[in-house]
Length: 362
Image 1 (cartoon, rainbow, N blue to C red):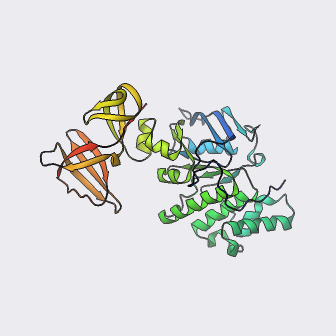
Image 2: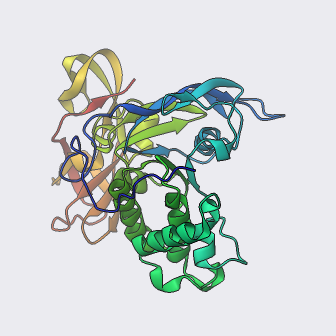
Image 3: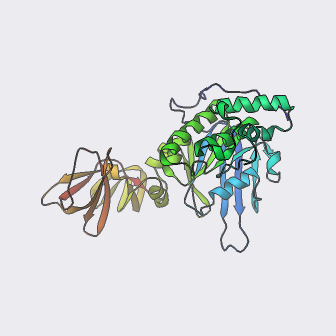
């Protein structure tokens, strides 16, 4: 095994924004071409012709509901499942038929898969068996220092918190200096506060080592926070790949609009960059023509109290930084998010005003 130079200083890729979110894909490190997988006795494919590419140092999230095929896709990339069709090219080499250990790809499992009978240091050193023992020991110590666990080398997994176990698993994956790390729901075993802290730590670690990453998650907030780009999956297919900002502001389909955040879906008649709706003539984020469904985010709607208004507030949820309202207008129920200052009691009659461009859906 050839050791790669250690890269432990935090260096922002040149093509990244100040927040570290990549503006455009780099030269592809990984190319997945029309992967298909059907399990025995299943009536439909678990993965149906999935294609995507990943740049050097890029972090991508595979996002979707349970059963959408995201974990199966990740396992095929890692070599733990064999595709029925399609191919996987990594660093210019076709690895479709290679076993996991021959792919030089790191994998962090959902349950971390630490060896309970080994110490923290022994777990991290496990993947370095081709190195002389002294060098393997030094590399494992180095990686534990990198993830902030250098004081816990003699502990065993059951003596660690969930967050510490997660960092040990990441240190083990990083120890062999892979160019790509696959993470399968790595934060699902952590409490809410620890998830937020740990996911930012993981992102920084990936960026500072230069490793690319693919994260499987069903948590939209997690995907928006961690990924440079998000691939949204539904029923075995990728339905949209875009940056977090683009995928939130310009969802391609009704499924994406409702899965990434919340959306109100309106019917309209579009002509170019405008559409006629029940709320008047609205500007569109992209051109469309004819009958369309339109996605309106809850924060794009203003509530205006009006004793003669056509709508009534039927529900309210205070969340500190904002408030969610459910508003009924005839047979239509709308979700509205307002700042904490404006409060409307249940039963208040209001008018709804849409104050931004709306998105025509495919």
